Amino acid sequence: MRDQLQLQINNASESMNSGFSDYYQNMVDYFHQNPDKNLSYSAFSNRTERATKALTSEQEAIFYIVAYGWQHHQSMQHLLSETLDFTSNAQENIRVVDYGCGQGVATLAFMDHLAKKGVAQQSSLEIHLIEPSRVSLDIAKLLIERLAIAHGIKVSIHCQQRTLGSALLPLNSECVETFHLLSNVIDIEAVQIALPNIAKQIKSCTGKNFLLATCPKYANAQIGFRILHQEIDFADNFYDECWDMTYQMYRVIQATWNQHTSTQRMAMMPWTSS
Image (tube, rainbow, N blue to C red; front, side, top):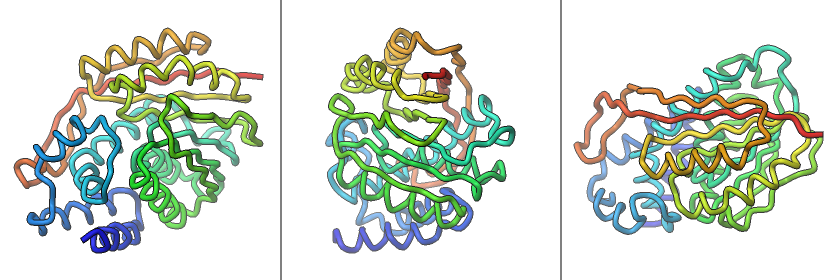
């Protein structure tokens, strides 16, 4: 069964002609048409402690992307569109660090945003993926490589299979801008514990820096955002807002598409280091 799931992920990745939405639609179709091969919500939630533990199988990865992937993608794209203008003084060489990247959805949203703004083909991305799950990390690398081809983006991908508590940030680079992405991980206690160490490292990343964090407005997430504000006190300013986002997505419990509204908290913090 594992080989079949890997084949499904690979085939779905090849469907990405216009963006992550193609992959998501393909995976939803597979999930909906093969109920006997899917995890139940309770089984997934119990094993992963409601998606806060590292994924261990392709079956878990498929459930996760179908249940949460579109929400992650849409919230990161919204934050990018609200806070940054990629059409003025667009940089050719950009470094992206995706913390607790999972299957790379935040980076995929970033790439889709570059394409939407018409600067994808002039962009070259140095991408650093930090993630404890080997299954998730392998899928993230595959999807980023495939989307880069679709959008005409040059990419170099560097993977760290480790927790954020032991992450080593890339401090030296020819890139003059770095984007630090924290997508739907700031509510996890282990990530909150790691934030002070991460903050010390990213303070030394030279050039222009932008930290972008998104998460549903969970109680635990509020703790994470508070820590983030305390530790990134060297930022020039803080954009921090809550948005009620409404979009069509597949609901795994109901096994159908419907309109979903969630309150997302989003933060963007810029600074320059010499």
